[in-house]
Amino acid sequence: MTEYVSTTSGGIGFTGLLTILFIALKLLNKIDWSWWWVLSPLWIGACVSLVVIIIVAILITSLK
Image (cartoon, rainbow, N blue to C red; front, side, top):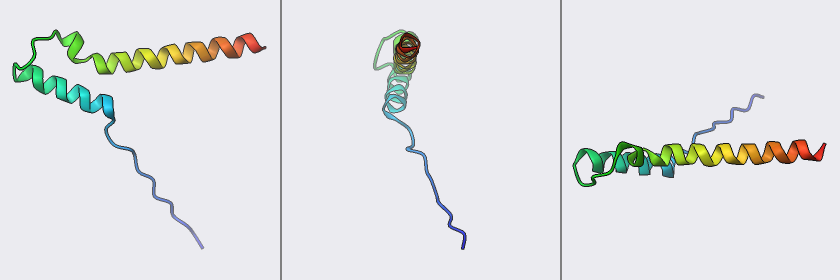
């Protein structure tokens, strides 16, 4: 008897929705931000992830 398990993705996350909202507001001229700030949810999330990876790597190497 074969069992099939269906998995689904969580869909678009908070940062994705925030980025889409900022882009829409920028294109509709509702905000006068630079594109750096409009796309900030993407790069801020990436930077936080990178910092966490670096901290974990430092902790792992210090335990050896």
